[in-house]
Length: 435
Image (cartoon, rainbow, N blue to C red; front, side, top):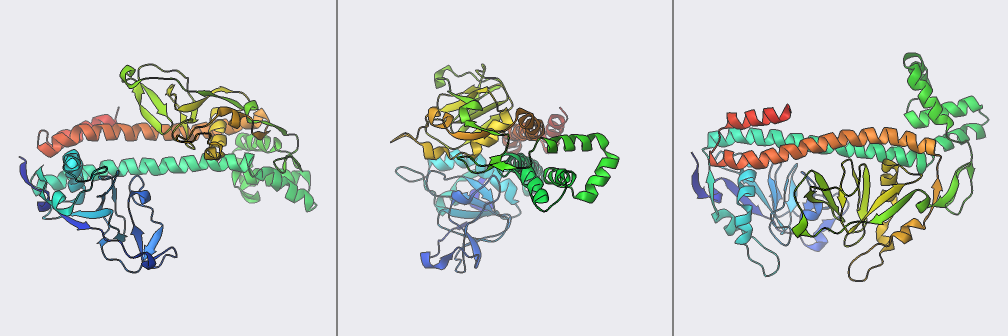
């Protein structure tokens, strides 16, 4: 059964204190310094500065809690010792209450805490305010058991995110290797310039594509002859020389065209908030996914970027979707494919084409008119087949994480209040995992 006590009974709070400007360095001397949520990620912070004059320190496992400004209430975990500045507090469990449980309680009472915060424009929360907020908690033994379930769920989501980052990096690295740095072409050229044969040049390109050296390729041919043949066929699509162009050297046989030869961007569709109905189709705004709707305006796979408000972000969706009017979406893939278009647009500095004064805005014609090399479709299609598999794996992980988050939001309040027992919650999680 739950009971009500001040938050200070289950948590110790250390308010941050910033070092002086001259005590901060970018050379990695001292402890990493956290000034606020600009260094936050999905779980652990990514510090930029250091200081040898730390006044207030967070410990591994602490909650890092934003206490000032528009991001008040945002949290990360401390994965090591940090010097924390005045925009943060470190919070850790006390009196036997585990920190993950404390974080769950804090999340539950965050709306109440923010409502009581001071500040004319943005909320600021004090140590006294956090300490004295009344919270309903369970006995320590129950809290410890619930904490294990919370940690397990958070670890699964974190692992999924890490895997997805790796998958994303793999797709981007392949795109840059083939279509930006032209590594297979340059590998062939280097061999031929050194007096090597065409066969040696082909092997060099196969190495550039696969990462396998000569010995590994021999084994690969013997054990996987069909895949070896596919690798060789891919290498054959790359020429063995470069040509001059207004963009610099590009592979011979590749044409120089405009971005509109590859794809066509179109403004998104209006959808007032009052007309939105929750459904299975994601709404995509300039800032990213923005809820769902029961109608889709575009088929998957889709590529979307910001048109107004937020410029520079590019999104790939594997679900039918509704691009909102703050976006540009790829209406037609001409000599591009979805994954190719996604990587191409990510490389462009969209902010450099800002045509707005007060509100950042992007004119699609400025993008359409950019000069760009046009690779052969056979190569683009091969890239698509590889990259799409990576993005499909990431999509499955994302859906899994979203399912876990939804389940957590549903079950955790009931667990914290004692409405359901831990075995009941574990059973619900197990059933969801096996769907």
